[in-house]
Image 1 (tube, rainbow, N blue to C red):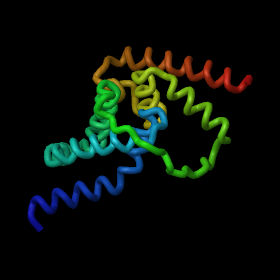
Image 2 (image 1 turned 120 degrees about the vertical axis):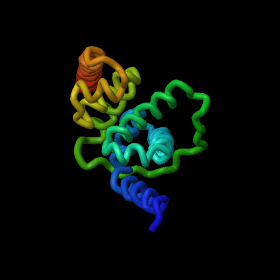
Image 3 (image 1 turned 60 degrees about the vertical axis):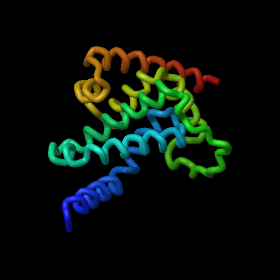
Length: 167
């Protein structure tokens, strides 16, 4: 097997193992929009493939993939004219196993209402469990910005979810 085949096999194996995780992360970053999440994952994987030899040698594949995913989402947010516009959303979704439909809807609504920067911080810190420093590095901001964005986002989520619970 040649170098190119080995590279492609390693990349294919990585994608097969990590794609569900990348998609869940993108889904959260995109505020629950599955179509946009898929687009963001595709963009991220294309960039990861181009940089695969360098990233694989450095041994930081997950960190690089996460950073590329966040950057692809930023690109998507900043350039809305590049988005495809789906004609119909005919996909059936499975019912969630945990919270009720109402609780899930309230959470998605509250998460989608956050500013994109706050949403990114919440996803990286509380869904992926990254430290303040790791989140700051992935987003290219200072740790203080991560802390303030997290505090503001959690306060907004608390208010939004408390308002939803009293209705």
